[in-house]
Amino acid sequence: MINLEEITIKISPELAQIYRQASTETQAQIQSKITALLESQIMSYHQEKLKKVRETMDKCSEEAQANGLTPEILKEILADTNE
Image (cartoon, rainbow, N blue to C red; front, side, top):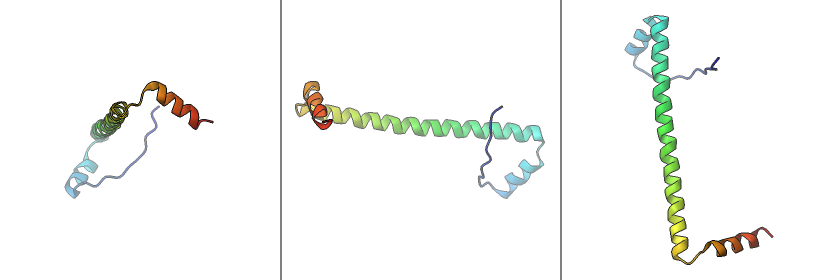
Protein backbone atom coordinates (compact mmCIF):
# COMPACT_ATOMS: atom_id res chain seq x y z
CA MET A 1 0.00 0.00 0.00
CA ILE A 2 1.25 3.49 -0.86
CA ASN A 3 1.80 5.80 2.08
CA LEU A 4 0.18 9.16 1.53
CA GLU A 5 0.79 12.40 3.33
CA GLU A 6 -1.62 15.29 3.52
CA ILE A 7 -0.58 18.79 2.42
CA THR A 8 -2.50 22.05 2.32
CA ILE A 9 -2.87 24.22 -0.77
CA LYS A 10 -4.80 27.44 -1.13
CA ILE A 11 -7.68 27.54 -3.62
CA SER A 12 -10.68 29.77 -4.08
CA PRO A 13 -13.64 29.30 -1.73
CA GLU A 14 -15.81 28.32 -4.70
CA LEU A 15 -13.48 25.49 -5.72
CA ALA A 16 -13.18 24.32 -2.12
CA GLN A 17 -16.97 24.13 -1.81
CA ILE A 18 -17.33 22.22 -5.08
CA TYR A 19 -14.58 19.80 -4.01
CA ARG A 20 -16.19 19.16 -0.63
CA GLN A 21 -19.53 18.48 -2.30
CA ALA A 22 -18.03 16.06 -4.83
CA SER A 23 -18.35 12.32 -4.38
CA THR A 24 -15.52 10.38 -2.76
CA GLU A 25 -14.69 8.90 -6.17
CA THR A 26 -14.48 12.33 -7.79
CA GLN A 27 -12.32 13.62 -4.93
CA ALA A 28 -9.97 10.66 -5.39
CA GLN A 29 -9.71 11.37 -9.13
CA ILE A 30 -8.92 15.02 -8.43
CA GLN A 31 -6.29 14.03 -5.87
CA SER A 32 -4.69 11.68 -8.40
CA LYS A 33 -4.57 14.41 -11.04
CA ILE A 34 -3.06 16.93 -8.63
CA THR A 35 -0.47 14.36 -7.52
CA ALA A 36 0.49 13.66 -11.14
CA LEU A 37 0.79 17.38 -11.88
CA LEU A 38 2.98 17.98 -8.81
CA GLU A 39 5.21 15.01 -9.67
CA SER A 40 5.63 16.27 -13.22
CA GLN A 41 6.48 19.80 -12.11
CA ILE A 42 8.92 18.67 -9.43
CA MET A 43 10.68 16.22 -11.74
CA SER A 44 10.98 18.90 -14.41
CA TYR A 45 12.43 21.33 -11.84
CA HIS A 46 15.01 18.78 -10.63
CA GLN A 47 15.98 17.82 -14.18
CA GLU A 48 16.54 21.47 -15.07
CA LYS A 49 18.73 21.98 -11.98
CA LEU A 50 20.74 18.85 -12.80
CA LYS A 51 21.17 20.07 -16.38
CA LYS A 52 22.57 23.39 -15.09
CA VAL A 53 25.01 21.58 -12.79
CA ARG A 54 26.24 19.45 -15.69
CA GLU A 55 26.63 22.51 -17.92
CA THR A 56 28.65 24.26 -15.20
CA MET A 57 30.86 21.21 -14.76
CA ASP A 58 31.42 21.00 -18.54
CA LYS A 59 32.40 24.70 -18.67
CA CYS A 60 34.83 24.23 -15.78
CA SER A 61 36.35 21.21 -17.50
CA GLU A 62 36.73 23.06 -20.80
CA GLU A 63 38.33 26.05 -19.07
CA ALA A 64 40.72 23.82 -17.12
CA GLN A 65 41.76 22.03 -20.31
CA ALA A 66 42.19 25.34 -22.13
CA ASN A 67 44.50 26.43 -19.31
CA GLY A 68 46.63 23.32 -19.72
CA LEU A 69 45.20 20.94 -17.16
CA THR A 70 45.68 17.37 -18.31
CA PRO A 71 44.40 14.16 -16.71
CA GLU A 72 47.97 13.44 -15.58
CA ILE A 73 48.35 16.84 -13.88
CA LEU A 74 44.95 16.47 -12.23
CA LYS A 75 45.90 13.02 -10.94
CA GLU A 76 49.11 14.45 -9.49
CA ILE A 77 47.26 17.34 -7.84
CA LEU A 78 44.70 14.99 -6.32
CA ALA A 79 47.44 12.65 -5.09
CA ASP A 80 49.18 15.59 -3.38
CA THR A 81 46.01 16.69 -1.57
CA ASN A 82 45.35 13.18 -0.22
CA GLU A 83 48.69 13.02 1.59
